[in-house]
Length: 120
Image (tube, rainbow, N blue to C red; front, top):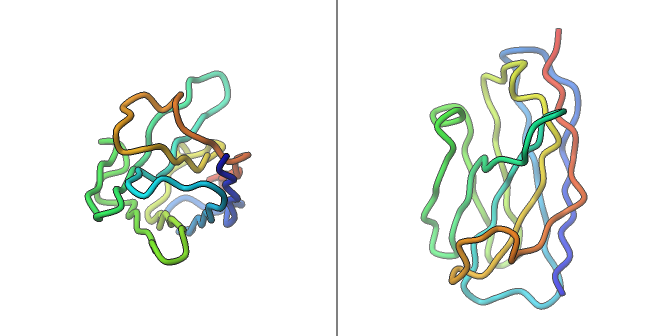
């Protein structure tokens, strides 16, 4: 089992910035993908960004150039720096981890989520 604990959500004005953090513990796969998905009210949970143990990244087109994902392998932690936030970024953000051999996120683990609200 793997446990994921997120922090850093909150209320921010359009154009502002937030940094999300997630710490993983438990039986963590040596080669893994860590990252973030988000779910807005009434919508499906969608990919935001993923990063491999080796540092390769993948971003949703809607966040490219505004969000940056990073990780600290020694701490089993992943971060999401979100800049130039827009109201449409409002969602619950979920931390995720899965083996690098799995393409289906359903085969991984999820945090409980942290709410990000972008509003004036």
